[in-house]
Length: 168
Image (cartoon, rainbow, N blue to C red):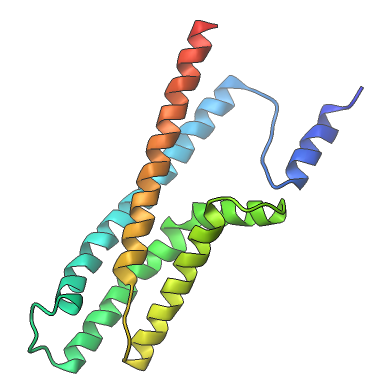
């Protein structure tokens, strides 16, 4: 008795996307999403490598005779590399956290998003103030590893769905 448009609207109000099943559109959507995750993963991976090289010098004080100006320079370079990770690569976590909050529930992405944002701004503050610790490598690495997990999870779900569809 209920119209499909009413159901889709109710699902949309909860913060989720829903549409009638169309195999071609689903396949296209899946490939587009995987492509976006690979781009995000690439940005996070490259930035993580660069920031980790700088973190070795900063945290482990391999070069203990570094001038304070050079240490500050390394912090700013780390900030530059970590910013695209926070703004672009971590975007799926923010969107999912927003949907969770909008639906008045707490998913895994809510604490992840809060941790990333707070660690980033605390590190920016420490960089600008010139004192304290920075966590740019943690932000980049955490995002990178979570994206790898999501990517592999999506592939596994896809394979399981394909296998179960073939069984039916």
